[in-house]
Length: 433
Image (cartoon, rainbow, N blue to C red; front, top):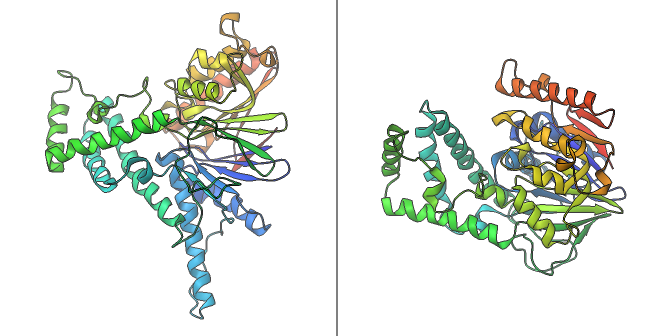
């Protein structure tokens, strides 16, 4: 297997290729990174007559889905050009590279997860975010950024579903290989079989129905709450009141929808679609933005934690190596030859503490070491989707990534040659298993 790790700003964008056949684009990163770094490389597949068997969207956060939307918009522009050419009414040829053909889309669409009233939720979030961003309270600004991202990602998720529809690009959604069954939400189900994409075998390890039910319940509670207020203006007033009272009363945005975070990780993230990918003796774990306990639960349900631990060739480190999503227990129980870190320093990710925890699971004291025998005193490699030099001069992202590079260099020196690293300086770097 090969994994192409793209520049993807604060998001994820990976191209997985089987040794013999099969190609899956795993998330699309941000739209700007798709335009600036990814789409030109993907277009070479079309030039070679090669298609993307599937595009996989782990969840609807903007930093995972907006690049996929850009890819579909590019293809739609080319289809429109083709239509006019065929009908003798030529229009200007698109100046953008044409994407490869897409055989199918794996995407637990927002509309399918939540049901009706998606527009009301979008309006609610869009109204709430500016009030939070206008404050000077760091905690509230962070919440506002999260709401703004969700507010943007919801219409993007809906557009992805519409563009893939039979009326437009006619890309099958959630129709797994080898089945003619009606498409449905993708999740771990008892007795569900693995499926093949080319020479690769995919096993769904998450989410379970429990995570998807929480997601649906939370959003629907959120909607009922705003329906009771009748007008979004009332919500603006409530937010302003809470902002003014900050420090005197608890301000917990997510409690409004009746579903608490799972140990600091939002419900949309724990509902990430996750896969174990196998080819021969090689294994790759795709985790989306899920939380460590949810990942371990999925691995156990799917039979990958037979002895309480799991060693893989490649681990896509979950949620850009946020400290909320990785802990010492996870690092001990899930180890890898290669650790892939996506993200550009936004929100402090990848976090130095997480990098250190992973290093300690390989080189630290016995109490912190990985449980898998395959990890004992064996070489391992850190892969990063970008570099400090690729970030805006003087930005927080550049500062974070400079600290990452400094820490990794120090850890390499201490490792006695067991740790090596690769930082993506160009559009992509290639990891071959």
